[in-house]
Image (cartoon, rainbow, N blue to C red; front, top):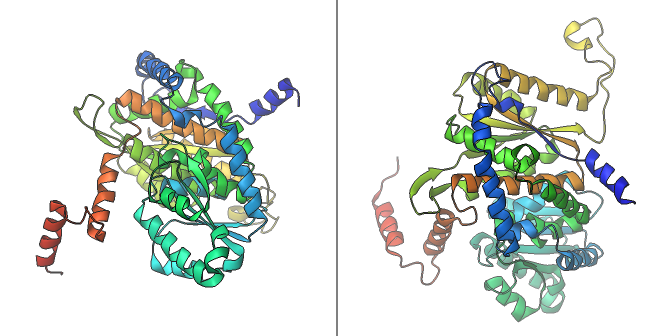
Amino acid sequence: MPDFRRRAVRERMTVRLDPSGMLSEALEEGGLARADLEALAERAADCVRTVAERRRGGQMPVLDLVEQPEALARTTALAREVRDEIDTLVVLGVGGSALGSRAMLSALGAGGPRVVVADNVDPWSLGALLDDLDLTRTAFNVVSKSGETASTIAQFMIVRDRLLRALGAIDYKPRVIITTDAERGSLRQIVNDEGFRDLAVPAGVGSRFSVLTAAGLFPAAVGGVRVEDVLAGAAWMDQRTRSPLLWENPALLLAALLYLAETQAQTHTVVLMPYSDRLRALARWFAQVWAESLGKAVDLDGRPRAVGTTPQAAVGVSDQHALLQLWLDGPADRVVCFVRVEDHGREIEIPSAYGDLEGVGYLRGKGLGALLNTEQRATELALQQRGRLSLTLSVPQINAFTIGQLVFLFEAATVFAAGLHRVNSWDQPAADEGRQLTFGLAGRKAWEDREEVEAWLAAKATRSLV
């Protein structure tokens, strides 16, 4: 396809941001002043320039994942191999090692082997899943960047035991594909020792940002997703987010709006609310990226600073009916970020019936997709009339290209928001503390004798239950 035609197609498939529901000029009361947004423009531009400089120095590998031809070729080649061998792929992972692939599969997966994401160690649900599988036609993708996530390692050990019993010490190995750090961790050692097929998460890419690595792309490719188009969409959004101009850069504008909402309007919650069931998992993925990247106790200078709004995943219209009463009459302490899908890919017409009943007949001849979008507009309008903050991301269609745009948009906006708050978007010290305490309570050597673990267990033993 000629370049000008390709660009025209991409322009039609471009995700757009409407910020009007955040601005005082559009709300009957409240809202952010455009002047305050303009006053932030130069600081925001500095964030873009800092990111660009760090990318040139190879310090932001997450944002460079849009161009990874060798890794993409290896990932898709292995996916083709596995697709011919199995009926079901089970992804064993948790958090970012599961949410990204689930987001893409929920939105795009079709026509390939069944892909199931097992992201919990609940013995009831995992046991029911394993009992239902034909192990001769099932493969397991074990995903952990660190290679030492307790829940994922536990899942793997259980699965390995079942595969050994069912298939034997030789034939079980092709049923395991491990995705982990290229050099470090227990899973990397296991790959080296046992010779499992494997894929690598690049250095410097944390689990929650790994959706555009093999951690997210391999399960999606097995499930029939054109992951090349996902990366093409991410690359398209990458170009749009390089501008230092606030009103030309959707990720920068999104970050600035949410930064001002938190620091000036004292919002405590940011709700991502797609009006599409297919994007439900994407909203949950966003929640982890936003929470772990921006929930910080100190800034880059080490000064105490409690930063971070609580992300919430909601889906219209079901959650609209559950939550709109609170959003309209309760505290004005949240931003609702709508994701509106213009073309849902199919339509179901509502039949003509009960025409004499005004409360029913007005729906005849309308489509469910059109009704869904009407509900979204009505919710957006209701919030604006009450002076409640919202913004809307408009998605032309749900396809691999637009999903890639959304993923990169949210990742870049998170990085820019961290720059505005002056916090480290890449670390997660509190979450790491929780993992270390899990090691201690589970009895891992060198962790079980931590003083706080022993003290907590001793105090717990003295408590009575009510």
